Length: 167
Image (cartoon, rainbow, N blue to C red; front, side, top):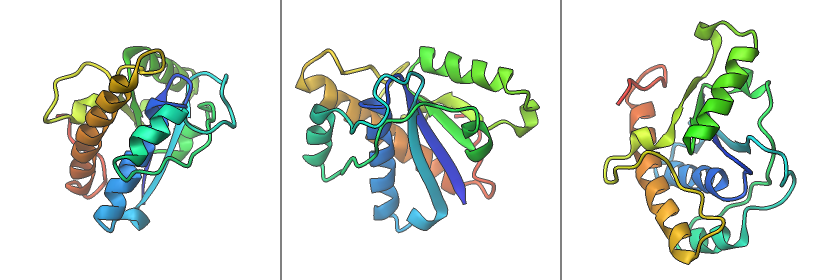
């Protein structure tokens, strides 16, 4: 069982969309049983709320359902997930800081990295936050997430341990 966690700031746009996209890809590949997938935010402002309506609608138009409820990243997530994929540099820094402060030896920490490392069609340094923009921003985020999640699934499926080599 491979355990994957997607992280953004508030867990209402990018990370729940990444979770939904990845689950959609797993269902298409008949691989759902081999993965545990979740999402979280570095901040706790939206805990318990559904994904942003605009993101749910954009995902729905692509046949992707977003059902998760926002939650905040917790230290225990470092113990429960093998891979933590972040949406931007700030999220990456916060998760890496949590890992350093956890007391876990580096060999026992999950692999923490930007999700966009797995993009093959797009060149991006991060998944931009669409919250304050228009509809096109949500569509662009989904394009990036579909690209990156496809690459991530390929990388995880190509290694026996589920630990992809660095792209």
